[in-house]
Length: 156
Image (cartoon, rainbow, N blue to C red; front, side, top):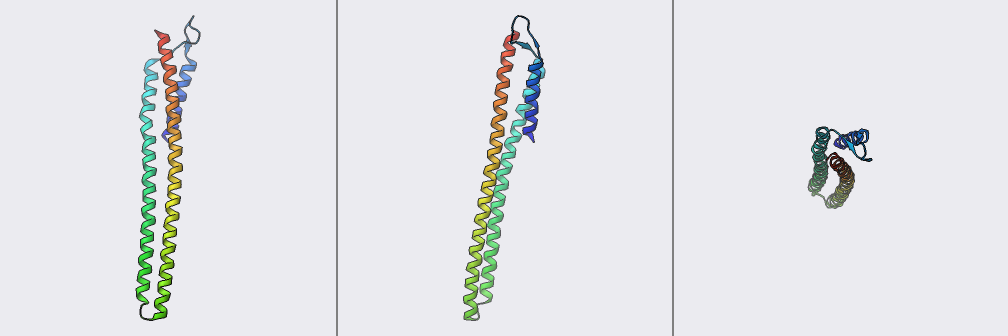
């Protein structure tokens, strides 16, 4: 979301500098509206924290997914224990209950592990993409700032 806004703002700043009128006898130098450029840079600065907020939300979702997996595993484990207690009356039934209970616990633990692995992979990928987007936006901002400074020095 905010990454697109930052991209648009950087593009606007780039176009403003590219379309700026040249300064006679100074070749590569140009004149831009300082207030407009500073406003765009302020908007970029304001949008970068939203990318960080998005990364935090991804981490929260990961934690929620892990907690849900643990709750599901605990529910399955409790169901297995309850089922095992119901069948205690007969030895064959008790043995079967133990076997099925252990099987359910193993299945629940496996499922919880799979959920945690999937959540970790999803969050890692999402955070990596967010980190790359933020890094790219920061790099573009730095480049724009250098160009802006060069243009400002040219005005002097």
